[in-house]
Length: 561
Ligand SMILES: [Zn+2]
Image 1: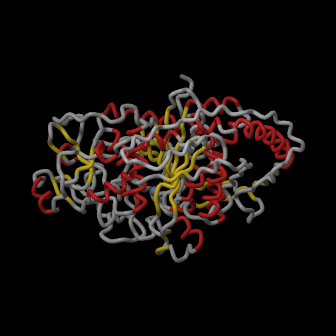
Image 2 (image 1 turned 135 degrees about the horizontal axis):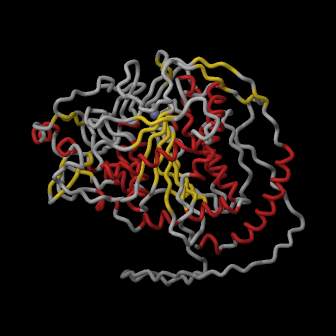
Image 3 (image 1 turned 90 degrees about the horizontal axis):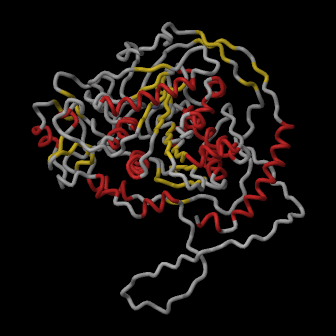
């Protein structure tokens, strides 16, 4: 890899020495948090996401015996510490004088690609400078045809809702407009911008969940993280209000064909846990790997990729103006334009209501704090950025696991009723593993499973991140006619409500990723875990510690093969 032949060896050695020095310093300065027991009254438990919502009358029955029923009293021990310490602590760089580093002359293979050109160009400038380093992901992206491979190549132009409605009237109804092929093409052609800080020295980063991490601190943290060898940072699009959306990768140099592990957090504004937890997990993992061989071995066999915070605007809004973004007793959940990000994907189930069912009553008809699926499928900028991110790792790079982090209710969704049982079983297994890790800690309550009915997705719920991810993995493609994903077989397109369940379907659909599993994890329990109050942050810090969230990335991958 170019990156490793450009003198990084030298920097790396110097860095190792520094890390040893820093860790010696840190060991002496760890301060003990004093813990105080506190009673928390859990009220208003609202289980949400992945399509099923329980507000007052539960429509989803959690199967686990351990699922708490009557507003339990939680004993939590919030760590008490100084309040306004910035999240990212930068340890001053220790200058080791003198540094007797032997000069290692990097072996640079000048990759001079002959440019096949017909134009009689100016005198060729013989340059010795090596090509700019390009991360593996971007190399793969450069040569892949995202649009050509992901659309059905059957229909060409968009049909009106009325025409589509007529085509499927024997199966049910359509609500909501599809995504124009032009916008789909733009989304899938979006070029990521590499903003990895290649030439800056890594510094010690500390993430304290009990401190506020605003957008500036978040971006600053990701940039610092990207200074470590094998960490890459990309801008993958813009938010509704124009902030950059970031994707991060831990992809250390290795000759092994890696498993790929995907994480997303905070698509919902008030669900801070996912965003903060993913950042902490990545930061701790890469820093540990610098001195711990076992962790480095894990990184050599697994590539970890994440968009830690999807709803960057909503997070910032709730940090800066929480009152403005509270409707009644509800903190804002959607994007700031009132579209619920976890309903907006042009997945298989977009806008369909199966015959014999009616549209779920909680689905909103207009923008608001939650439950509005959008003006049309894929209408939000964030959705568009995530569509390419998901497609790239699931289809192009054949990812193994995907965890989408939400809040609340301590439950985990896995599998979709419309997948084959065999496909679904992979997600169910992933859920079992995640539950066993989380519940192995100090666990007053337990994380438990929740079942989704077989009609899930066909009651006008819109399409979530994991709905879209699973749609991609099982081989659905984007239909220019309908503006969302469909199945194809023998030159024909089929909407999900015509097929309902792949196990009983007459059509054959070729899987696009045969090992993919995805779950939706709802962190915490109750409304007190939402938002960014001091109280909430302390609850979440305890949740992370007690339920061993720090172990997830280390324990889940199948790295012992
Ligand atoms: Zn959510």
